[in-house]
Length: 95
Image 1 (cartoon, rainbow, N blue to C red):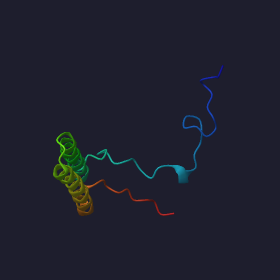
Image 2 (tube, one colour):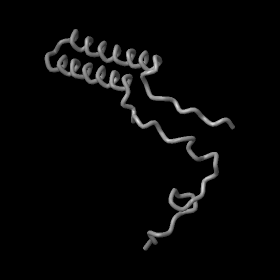
Image 3 (tube, rainbow, N blue to C red):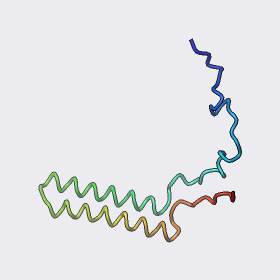
Image 4 (tube, rainbow, N blue to C red):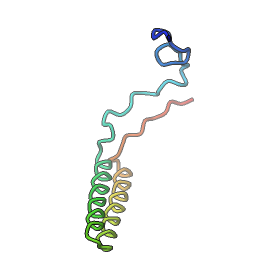
């Protein structure tokens, strides 16, 4: 039987970490809910829906249209992230 109160030396509960392994700061509080993230989700979901309809009604133009919508969603998300509507980048400490 194992003792539930004992911890390994390097475990989170019982170990000690040096300063260089600690996080620089708290993670961003938006959890990825940004304009760029929602654009990526909407483009992918809409593209998948169109592709699924294209598979149900055997229609290659519909399938290609769904793929195009998903690709446009990815590109729009990349552009929005570059414009500052994405996740905030944390600044690393100077070593």
